[in-house]
Image (tube, rainbow, N blue to C red; front, side):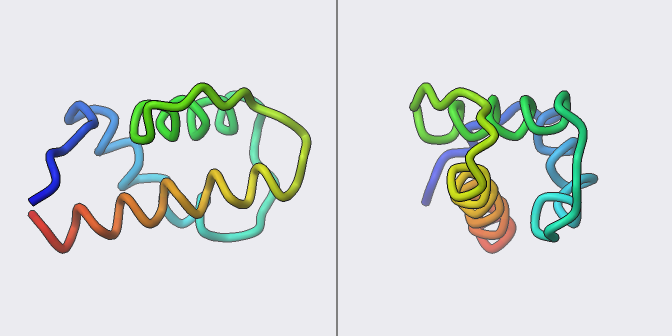
Length: 74
């Protein structure tokens, strides 16, 4: 079983914003930074927010997959 790597507040933020993460709509820079921060916490990486579309898409995918994986465990 995978350990939850997020705080309760981070998980609630993710839960509240998962539709924005999984849909292809424009988001604010602060929102994008938070998704990258959560991504880095989940993966242990050090990805920086970027304007690269592929990077953003892959980052969102990783965060969403983690969220859905946790939902199946909890």
